[in-house]
Amino acid sequence: MLPEQKGPAGPGPNTIDLDALDWAKMDGLVPAIVQDAATGRVLMLGYMNREAARATRDSGRVTFYSRSRQKQWVKGESSGNTLTLVHMEADCDADTLLVQAIPAGPTCHTGRTSCFADAPGNFLGELDALVADRAATPVAGSYTTSLLESGIRRIAQKVGEEGVETALAAVVQEDDDLLGEASDLIYHVLVLLRARGLSLADVVDLLELRHQPTA
Image (tube, rainbow, N blue to C red; front, side):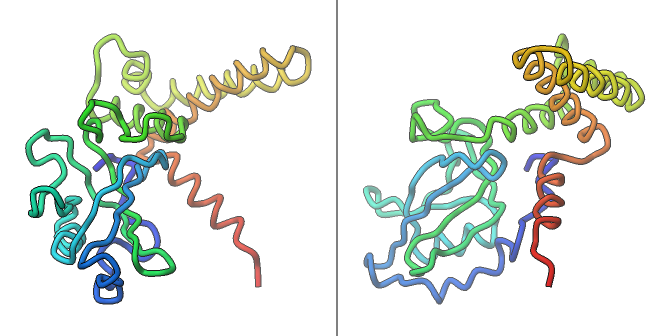
């Protein structure tokens, strides 16, 4: 699990009522749509029987039922490209599962990130995941690694510099200049958050909380 994933959002992966699912509709199976919990990208579609869903819920390792092989299988058991469960819930008809997970490596057997080649994702989430990976596993020659290793004061200084440059670009420069400076600022803010053990997801959670209507 990536550092920014502190655990499931909402009710959590271990609270789903499997008995409430409509297992009869597809002869004991339900489709399971797998989504990258960090980026929102749809990764794959599989099928689960009750045992596979229970194993996924209880172990945290996304598990499916193979219709062709007539057996249960854990995603990545041979390739190592596992899916770690973050959250699992049923749709309104209780006959389909949405599985949010953190992938280790490509999900598709072709080596692609997703089984759907053009599935849209959230690049900002991907960038945050990359920063998290650099924090966990430093890479020689990586600017992100060197920035993280420079310490919180240096990173904070860079954020300040980029913030001033963004403000100046908004006032006296062209749109392309503003976009470039804003991109630099957002990247450095992600690194600053990670240096403090925080993440983009934490910011999103707070924004969502602030957006809740008041009684």
